[in-house]
Length: 178
Image (cartoon, rainbow, N blue to C red; front, side, top):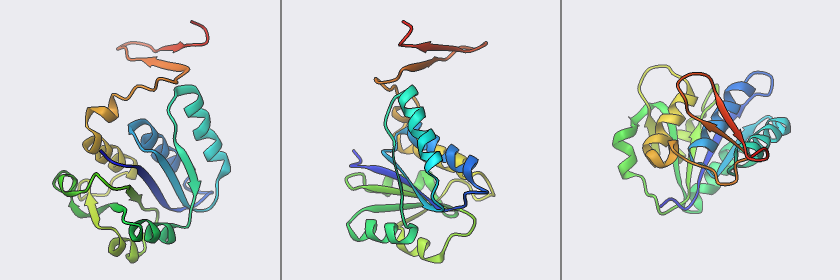
């Protein structure tokens, strides 16, 4: 079992990337990450919104603003495993069985321009397809393959709001009203 799994978003730009980066964090939270680390511009409002989601829908996602390459370098030097999601890596379904699960894992998701050092520092450069695509889709597919059904079927015991899957309409249960 993985000791700890964090997602590191590199190169965040406050005026340009909030929506896609929020979606990365929501996928990370929903599919089993312990933490979401943001490198680039600081965005306390995004972190407040993510904590609000956890308060309502349960679970816990630790958030922190970090220096991208510095944090990555320290993680690897401390014995952690770093997995970079890129179009230029080994196919993720082939790579996942090779990745150690007994160490802290850092999934690195790039921004506009990924420094070459990221490819060198990460032990695994992993591709979710080799066509241009969304980093949100790449993270979701990787985490689904990493955790299997345990990720996408996750239930949060401390959830106040619980969504019931139905074909038509929506059903949301509020535990405070029950």
